Image (cartoon, rainbow, N blue to C red; front, side):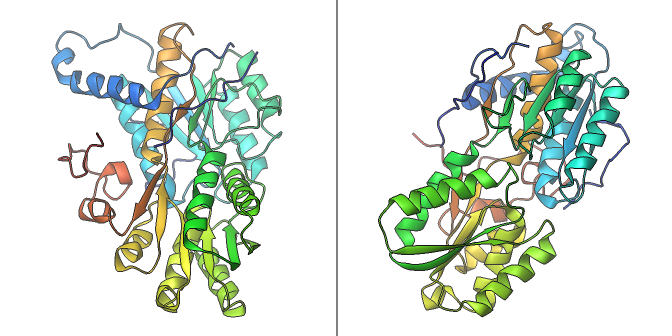
Amino acid sequence: MSRLDEFAPVQPVVPEQTGNAQASGPDRRGLLKGAALGSALSILAGSRSALAASGGPFPAHPKWRFVFVNHVTTNPFFTPTQYGMQDAAALLGCETQWTGSVTSDVGQMVSAMNSAIAAKASAIAVSIIDPHAFNDPVQQALAAGIPVFSYNADSPADSGNKRLAYIGQDLYLAGVEMGHRILSLVDSGPIALFIATPGALNIQPRLDGASDVIKKSGKAITIDVVATGATVNEEISKVKAYYLGHQHVKGMFAVDGGTTEGVAETMDQYGLAAKGVHGGGFDLLPRTLELIKKGSMDFTIDQQPYLQGFYTVMEMFTFLASGGLVGPANVNTGLKFVTKENVGPYLSTSTRYEGKSSQSEIVPLTVPIAG
């Protein structure tokens, strides 16, 4: 079987549900463009009420149970992922379960997968943060007739993992784009690249991409790679400690959401933007957005975590409903730089789509549509 390694062009907290199903709802074939899938899902969602009286868009089907195995189940980054998972399941008449590890413990994640297999889950989604640890449980699930998809983090192409498709950001390319942005901000001198858990496949490819671009640029920039930990509090503490010991640094950049908030807090506390220090990172934690608006940090990168839950459920459902004929397909959930110039709409709305509200609602268009 061949892997699909192409992607579409790049352009708080829900209570942990570990171990409890919550109603909320192998051939890898084809490449599904994110934009096209988004349009199809919008049409389906818009037709929901009109089709309800006639029995819905699909024939009667089992109330399939989709199990999501996550590496940091209580991290606020995944609040919108859980909302997206629940919304898609509710739309389709299915159930979801959110389980895994709080601290990126691979053993706990594998145990959660084994439990899902034993409980005869209808389909499993797993964030593959280790290059080999999930190969056997994925194979066992497939042998038991349970389709497995990866989301947010994926196995390397040469790992031997047989997951059916990946739904999430093209992580290495995101790092490459981040590297180019860093080069536009820093001409020379030392910078720090922070990473919560080195080697984890949800973030290491970003660091690799950024480092590769910077090293190939020929600029006199030196890189310190700094590990910060798996929880937001320790990430913030590690960033501040690094700065206090390296006050000559020209830039501080993070490849995960919690550490990005740490960079933003440190930049703000010590007034580093006014001193010519640049900073940036990933994800949309509220404090990060507030400090970008304030001008304390240059940018963050949106990878649309809501879609990582919503699209994954849609792929699971269509795969089962079609007997495996539709999909599976890799979906790139995107890359968008959020800066002081465009952060406003993120701060002026509180929605499920960004994880800041549990309320279901249709949000008026607040951002311009690119022509």
